[in-house]
Image (cartoon, rainbow, N blue to C red; front, side, top):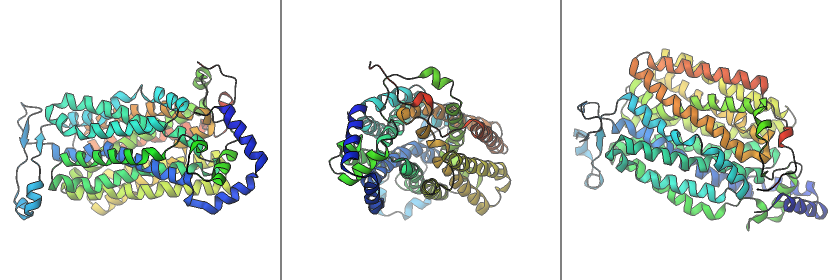
Length: 497
């Protein structure tokens, strides 16, 4: 690992030997063929794999639940009843089809199972983010993806063994996923030039939305054809393959990468020379606690992920139960909002960097504008969504608009921490994940409670609560949010532990 002194010495050598403008021109000619964009695509694949593993239970749980099972056996499994449509499958498909058990899980139990992915993640992000910033994120991110993928393969066995074991497995899987979602931001501190920060991070983040689209598109079909266990087998295997293929290509910083060109390396290092990105060995905890701009980001994270986790966990269930469509069509319809959201995530990042590079708007104005659009429009849509359930087309249009508008926050508040404290980006990302996982542990269980109490008005109450929480978080961010480098994040003298 290179130290801050080594990096500054390298910057000085580069500045003496070359010209930053020449490096920038060289970089602009490379465009999206640059290696930093290749890193974004690699991390996009990582996020894709993680998101499919987060979403696979959401799409599979309607097939896993048997509402006709005896209530006296809460975890009893029964063979899924055969239907007449099975006679139309060819002999190969019949031989490949697995006998999938079904379980009598109440809406409360389903909500607990869906939210259990976040139960063990409250304390993990902070130490993981800190260690990734100090020792490098390559091994943290790679190990996290591999562990999560392996645990995904064992979910069918855990579900058959009992609810308790399934929850425990999901808890450990959530911790492994924190390693990927938190650790990768210490990579961008060394790889993303300030004028390209939004587009690079949103390209990587779009993998999460793309993963949601793919798992929802094919998940229902897999459940109806070869059985719900294969949703976990297939996407767990894809995660293992992605880890083994991409792990050798990821490096903590461009200085140590063997394949990057000298011109691109010069451009990245020189563009980051004006900000101190080297992680501190000591943390200004008291200053962080008193920082209102940091609290504005943390509160917004909680509110944003309250809604995000509901969309992730309950979109298939909402479409299946409210629109009364079969599991396969439910998966296809559920995928539409996420594919549009994936596109809007990338376009939002490009637009944010365009406005910043052309000096059309100040950085803080861009962050707040994109956040406001990404919060207000989905909140209004959620309020009116229960009243348009009689129309399939309007309901799907509202869900697509909600997902696409929400994705704009990726270029707003969700990367604002890179602006105010780049040297502590990994630690702050971990801290924000604590708030995100707190919301993720509460919101799905809350929706499950509302639905179990009143199936007709439960969705309305859940949507109204989500809209209120989002608007309150937006108001707090608009008042106290900032994009200026904080005093406590500037270069100081630290004592190594």
